[in-house]
Length: 125
Image (cartoon, rainbow, N blue to C red):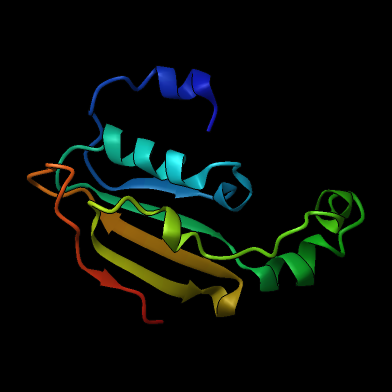
């Protein structure tokens, strides 16, 4: 995420849901981005992250002439960044969307938001 945007959001002000669509797969630090999403969300807010799967990258982006150069030598495969969800998150869920071209990763900031209590994780598709 861009520092300039994050600088505008110093205090927890966002109720729900807080939605982030696209791009997190290519962040250098997706865990930091999700931690920031959790920080700016009010307690109880649902965070929704939607992004492309490896299937979408291979079937579309690697074939489109004006964008394929960005994906050709990307190194790692696109994966669902479940490891980046803050440990305190509750109600963590992952689901396949658009016939496997996208994924939805959702979690909720705890009402207590003490930063210590691990939440429930449902990783089944």
